[in-house]
Structures are given as structure tokens and as C-alpha cells.
Image (cartoon, rainbow, N blue to C red):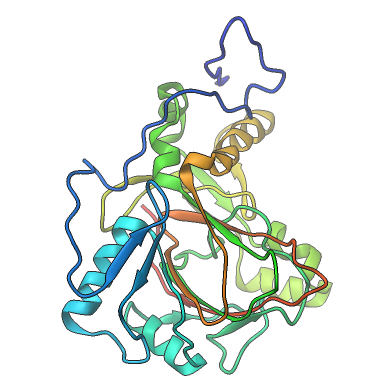
Length: 307
């Protein structure tokens, strides 16, 4: 089946499978996007239209339980990525915070911190996350979310961007949706890591993490949102389509993360903690700070298989 994307007759595109069209976009944080429900135990400051909020007024060195944990979880589902400036947590305290949301997963592709389930960025390859991606979609059950702590911020640059992939799905044309709504795609760890691992380690990890298949559009297990579930790091093809057609459609779907209306951009300071919903977002770490160092530690929370 050939995908024909809507294109103005007066302005033909040379690459219609990739191009994005100008005009009004539907921007909803949650289904229905009704009136805001206030948060009682902290101050929440929105940073973007559909995602991104800064939270102040709490000290995460005391692990949040009960109503505070419940309110933070509601904020995560609503805003998809939360920022906690000036927390200055230890690695152990960061792990304790992540464990409130489930078991932590290890990532043998990345440098370990103090423990195997804490990874440290800034000690190996200078930059390798400056591509739009969701974490560990090459696993049968990709990460539910992640908690990243900025240990050493560069004097300039090193921002991270997140994109709302539910908003991206909402604004796809009906013609594209009818093709992808029940489609599946192959996710493979090799494209994202082949250039950064030696051949022996790469082969060992390929044996441990063979390619998996996930729906192109997943249902968020808590909000019910339909969310675009392919990314440029790990998605290699759409099952059942000819190679050329799969490649063209994936280029179009990958391009959705580049729309500024779906994004929030955050400038880090040392001690800031970020907590994001990996089921609803993609992110991009900007590599513009060299020769300065940017050191961060991350824990990932194990998730479930997309459906």
C-alpha cells in the first residue's frame, strides 16, 4: 500500500514522506484535557503546553510516600516529565526515589555508577544520545520511566529536550493513522549502540537482546492515550510493508518528534533531578558543551510490554 500524505497543490514537497505541514495543531495534555486539578503538597510550574513542569517546595532527600507520592505520580501522568531543581541527592537517595515506582532495570550498554542499576553519563563516549529516542525499546518490556540527576553541569549547553508522543499521534493525518493503528515494528539495539561498542561486546549483547516487535502505536497503560511508539535509535522496519515504503513511513513518523509544539527544553543546573514517563515521550540530549564535561547519573524503572 502506498502512503500519500496530504500536500498543498500549490506547494509540492520533494520528500512528502518526511515533510511536516504548517497549521494549527491539537495540543492536549490528557484525554479530554479538562480543567486543572491543583496540587496541594508542592508548587508545580508548567514549562510547556502539553509536557514539562518544574516542582518546588519539597525535599526529595525524604522519600515521598502516601499522598505526596500519589500527587507526584498524578503530575507525572499529566506533565510527562518533571524537574526538581536544587535537590542535591546522593546516588542512593536517587535510587530510593526511583524504587517508589517499581523495580529498577540495568543497562549493560552504558557505564555503571556505584551500582549496576545506576548508569553514569560523561565518562565514556562524549555524546551519543543526541538523537530523538525512547529508552530501551529494544527490550520486550521497555523502561516505564527514568530518573536522571545532574552531577556536573557544563557552563553552557547540554540541555535536554523531550517530545510528547501522544500529541504527535493526535496530529497525524487520518490517512497515516489507518495504516499504523494496527501495525507492528521491529526494534533492535544495534542501530543505537553499534558505533559505541567493540565488536565482541556488541555480539554478546545482540545475543542477550535480540530484535523484538512492538505496536507502532501503543496504548498508555494508565492514561489510555494512543502514543506513537517508534524512534530513530531502535526502530528498523514496519512489519509487512515493502522496505522502501517502510523506510518512507518511518522517516515521516520519526520527524514528528521534531515539531516544537510537542516539545519542552530544559537547561540543567547541578543537583537538578528529572523524572520522565518513557511510555509517553522521546528525548534528545544536546551535545553542544564540549570541551566541558557534563556528568549525570540515571536509574531506569522497569516497564511492561507495549500493547
